[in-house]
Each structure stands twice: as structure tokens, then as C-alpha cells.
Image (cartoon, rainbow, N blue to C red):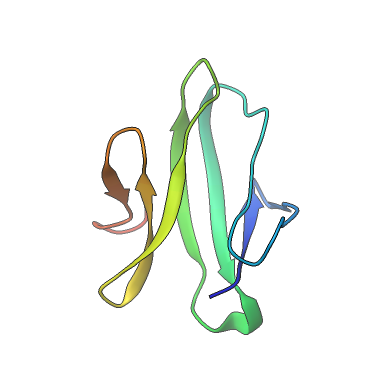
Length: 84
């Protein structure tokens, strides 16, 4: 399902209907929102801690009836116990 990403309230460019790259992130906590094309599903909000090197990788995955972010470094889902 095509999606968009909003970083700290600002829409980010989409490089295809199935991926988005957020580059040059500052270390610390960021807030992102995943919005689905034509409002097919409700938006999902996530809080992410970015390490000093600014590198984090996530995969948007459908799990049961919702979409979650899968953290490629920690191998855990964000959003299972409410929005994180």
C-alpha cells in the first residue's frame, strides 16, 4: 500500500510508492508519522531515537491488522504496545 512520511510535521519526498529515505538525521529523538494514500488507513505515529552516527533502518510491515515499523538494527517492532 503506498504511503507517505511526515518528519516533525513536514512531508518528506517519496522516491517510489513503497519507500522513503530520511537522510542526514540529527542524533536524538525524532517524531515521524506514516500516512497512507487516499487515507486508506489511519496514520501511525512513531518516536525514534537516532544514534550519534545518524543511521537507522526500518521496514514498514503489516502485522495482524495494522502497520508497524520493524527496526533493522534491534530486530524489534515499534508500535506494538501503542505508538512508540
